[in-house]
Image (tube, rainbow, N blue to C red; front, side, top):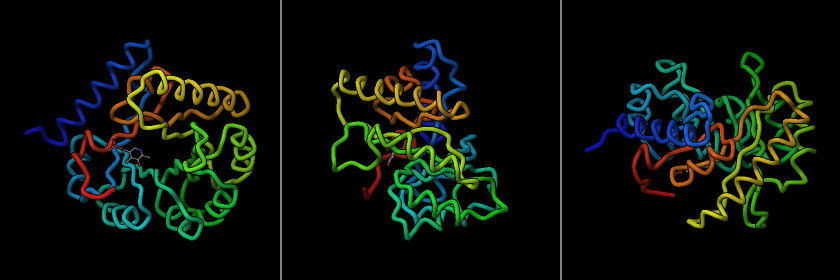
Length: 231
Ligand SMILES: *Cc1c(COP(=O)(O)O)cnc(C)c1O
């Protein structure tokens, strides 16, 4: 039976291989271990295997895990990658290091106000709705720059880049098309905000294509922690 440590090491070598295939440095791609629904013991196991960046999707569950681990594992970097309602923004502002799914000005302003002043600014990515289907979250391409402008004016937020959840598909051509579009948006945004450095895209089954298109952070859950019992 493989352990969490084995699976992290497999994911790291997949990242290294994908980076090598497109002549990128594998150190420029961070592995974000998505631990949603998984117990604290699984996070600790991953931590002991050297993993430091963890992604959570649910506000309350995320808060509980951060609080449970903050004393003994204070160098964990917590990333919120789920949908956020504005009335829950305080929890994210107070407990997380990163927020990947920012898509509303109102929430940006609330997070800025609610970020404790003794903490580093909240590191944020704008979520892009790359397929522009109305059922999906994120901003459409033309809304990226206006939202970036708002974020960059807020002292307790630091704009780091873009995040997307592309269409779930096994159609490689469609995958490439969406990742290419995101890469282009990122390049455009970087010309306005040269300090941004994060393109959060790619999951277990599309990591290679994502890295080929400039991903700097891949978010992997199931391939590390196993199947989830609920969503
Ligand atoms: C759950 C989730 C992941 C990880 O998905 P797996 O299929 O388990 O690897 C990545 N990104 C986001 C935004 C998620 O919600």
